[in-house]
Length: 561
Image (cartoon, rainbow, N blue to C red; front, side, top):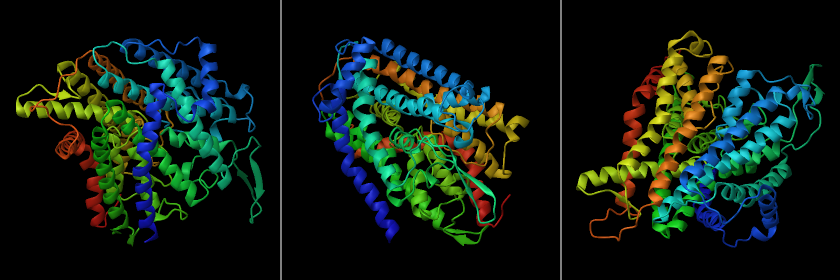
């Protein structure tokens, strides 16, 4: 009963606060007055003065995209270099060596793309300096990149007959200064108050009851944990991530970590509705996301509480924190894979086969069920374009969205955005299953071993960062393949999204007529759900059948590998 109350409370608070944060973000990006402007307005002005940014100057989609790509390239190179020079930089209290080149490449690509996949143990690999000016800074900037791309797309959809979709440098400044920074400060203070560590001290050393020495990692973890959750980043300061008691010490911090994962992504849906001047449009998208979220959560909870014939238990606690229990572990696994976040409070490798399937399917859909900050919104809008195109074919009418014609160019770009991550997941997994370098890192044989590989590349392509944890990915092969997959999964979607934004911004808005297909009612919600599930099912059912489905059937027979 207690767990059911927690689940209901989580969903109720999300539904209640998402419209509020969405309206606030709309005011921020529209340049309107809001309650944070008197607090941080001075910082925004200083940034503009130092950088020479003009708030009034706007860009077309190509210039905006150029800013996105250049900014992220610089961040990726900088992060790579400080890892390679870590041993010579300050705040390296444990005298950690330089990071190997292939791991540095993977980590740089990971944190730049908002994936935060980690092929390493944070407390044993990276210094405080690299954790802060490298990873934590990228947690802010990669999250802001996703948000501002979504804002640019919203402007492209809601403006008419214009080339301008905003200014990238202004948008990313406002995003960090007014949205991410204030929320991170508040969340960090709560985490510290609950017992999360925030210190520059050396690692503590204690003598155990057996007389051996135990090293207890410390560090500025609370501040990184706050932005990694809010920005749907996910990279853990500690290897155990959100299961570590120094990061998430209490049920309250666990609840807030899960809530922080979804609130900005859910709020951006209502930011879109505010721009479009249509609450119904926003609620149609939010309800679609919420139905998929609730369905995945229900399947995962049912599977996890069902009897496991291999282990002969119900409600398996393997790989779960006793502080959180089954329900909170399952909820966290569904939330983190619905969002573009790799934070975990349990080991997904130990989930039941169907719970693992839910997590993988969430990743494979491009994490459009709320999704990453920004990426979830523009991801589901891509599916909306496909949906209205199919609806137009069924009635023999040129498809429209928000009064604008959806033509061949937009549909082609939408298909590219859907296919790019899909190619990474299926092709890269096939390569890894076919060569010794890919099979060498497996911890399990049979369908579960295949699931470990499939999950890794699904996580990379979906810019999630979580892992099944049974795969040793810290090899040259996996570091480079997963790193490349993360770049394709991020920018292979952002580029067509920006192209669609520019194309739609130039179009006129036609008046609503009797033949207009409404995109703000239950019929549209059902059609959008059908398209998402059909596209996902047709694309990913074969590999899912070979992995978690086969494992589930064998588990019911009491067979394991």
